[in-house]
Amino acid sequence: MSDKIKFEIEYVIQSSPQLLYQYLITPSGLSEWFADNVNSRGEKYIFIWDGVEEEAKLLKRKTDEFVRFSWDENDDDTYFEMKIIVDEITKDVSLFITDFAEEDEVDEAKMLWENQISDLKQVLGSS
Picture (cartoon, rainbow, N blue to C red):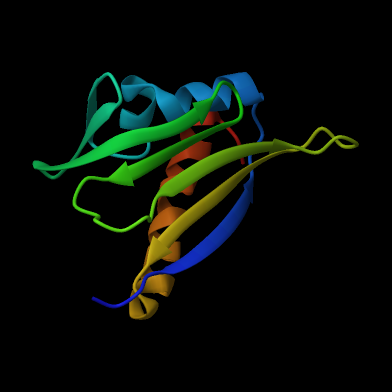
């Protein structure tokens, strides 16, 4: 098994942290931009893309600040995290993504996040 590489990306999002957080934690919010459909039972989330289900566990969360998930098929300590950061001076809101990918898949994973965040900005009406 090859080691996955951690990568981080930051996006400026024109939204309140409270509204943005609802799109990161609720199945209905996640269904609008992250996956075709999302169901949850407690800490278990089922993400559906093109009829294929992927299960993830909600590892940690802090209201209006961040969510951290781990894909069920991962037997390592990788995760993906979406953290909301508010600049103290400008009050700009950023979404900071932390994820892991195989070395030869990092660029592809970043492009996938670019597309997902573009959808999220559209849903939020943020340019």
